Image 1: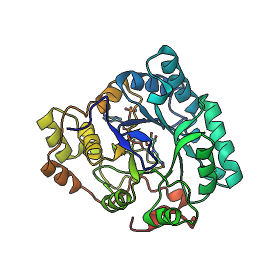
Image 2: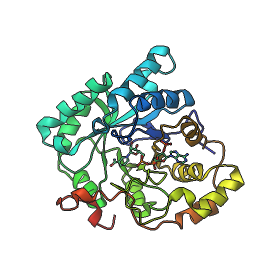
Image 3: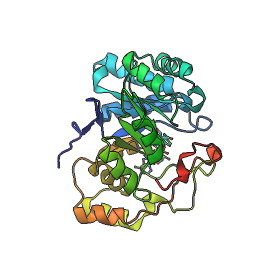
Image 4: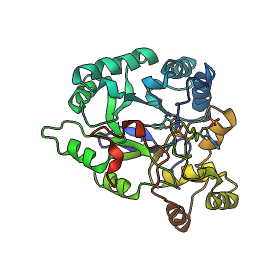
Length: 300
Ligand code: NAP
């Protein structure tokens, strides 16, 4: 087993590194008590998480920043130990709005830089490159890009910095074999969002597939290792070198999700879990279905 709880980073194509295990921080702002993001990120850092996935539009980025800063002030971690990923929201794509949007994230976090800044659709990449050159982000990446959209960027004349990562839905029921293979060839890390199959909020989640964590195979493999189906789902991705950012604001589950470095799945188990792929997304982003760059009409 090569990864440990202390060392589980993957090398990015620009020389930076990203911990494979992270914590997601999106929770419905209408129903989530204020301060949950702050408490959860502080606990996550104590538990050993070093990769934190957030965004200005999650409306709790100030809490996340406060948690990170307090843990740095306490001496628990140094800034360089933390890998923070922020995101450029759709309304900030015009190139002149990109840096101000990132600066707003930095002001909200009260940090000098983020480790990764990702965009959702293939515009504004030049302005993203300028943010990296200005030192406001260590790396730049994308999210929800299909192969064609990645190619658009990779084939862009004069491309200066390649995206280091593509954050996409990825879990045993939607394991992205083709996009993963393509990204491996291009040295782009896949960061798997909704790695536990989402919170199943019917306002934005396609509930055609049953709950991932009730899957019989994940449960039975879990019994063998004395692990939960969530831990099996996370280990599956990490073992394929897919980074994961499970969201939890529950102290026990924050700890549980990090306990995946003391066992390994066998090749047969990995294959069996790959066999669960249904090619059905939980996160369809249908509200943007009529946008010309809606990413999910292509096969992958
Ligand atoms: P997820 O991480 O797959 O699932 C989160 C849900 O699972 C929450 O309801 C959480 O509840 C529960 N949970 C967490 N650990 C558990 C465990 N061990 N056992 C049982 N249930 C558990 O879904 P997600 O929030 O959709 O995705 C994770 C992160 O990915 C987000 O927070 C966000 O940072 C990112 N994301 C990005 C995009 C994008 O377009 N780029 C889209 C979606 C998500 P508790 O909090 O109560 O534990």
